[in-house]
Image 1 (spheres, helix red, strand yellow):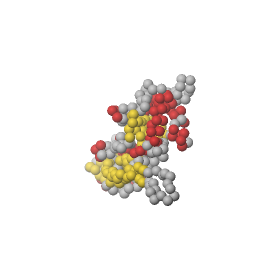
Image 2 (image 1 turned 120 degrees about the horizontal axis):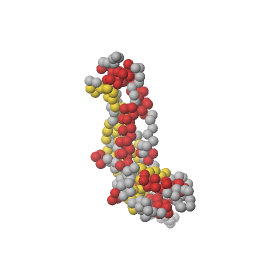
Image 3 (image 1 turned 90 degrees about the vertical axis):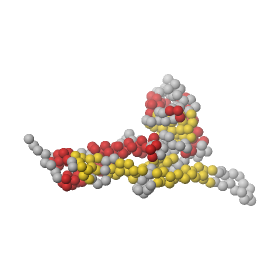
Image 4 (image 1 turned 120 degrees about the vertical axis):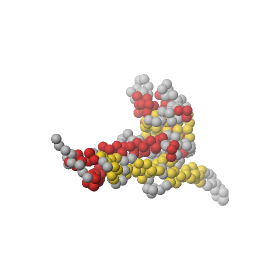
Length: 309
């Protein structure tokens, strides 16, 4: 019967340390396609890692040009109304570890330690940020993209897409895009449209008409006011979490311009693993920490909620 050679604490620590560089590089290269926030919200990591707050300004332009007399001294002036906000930055953590048995077996067999737990830690970080970015976190005073204060929320003209016709659904979407553009005097158009996944599935499978083969979704991607105005494609995504995000627990659709000047998420310190340490007589752990400041919507007029679809 074979026996496992037991390492002393210093040897075990040295072995784990030698493995972590390889493991962390492998884990950091993993892409999680179902993590939504990087594709929906610009991420800003430029702030100092240990900063306590991030200051930003919500801006709205006022003033317009007009005809004047050549000798006039009361020229129209443009200005920007700015409101100052501060977003607190908080620290969170998720790490991984190995037991003595796992370490001893790996060294005895000449194998690398598995990266499974490290990958699980990294995945937990991405899921945490995804939740905070979209839904916010009331314990830290964070609002998310789904429920940001100051964003105008209106009711869908038709609503209840389960019984609406294709024309009514198309009208609801184009009305939402148009109303948002009106709020900026047609200087900014929403390029992104988010809706509950169930509604996305509905328009992806329902035909525009009984005689055609085209779905409402494919028709909408080519025939919407944003694409007609700019010649660029409208991004349409279905997301979980919007089914009851609207007023009175109704389904919510979000239209906005995906640009850092409109909204961004502050992550001064993305997830990083700290040096391994001995956490107990038979266990060695690798802490992981990160710091984030939530989502800031800087130009609420370029975001629009449409409830009751």
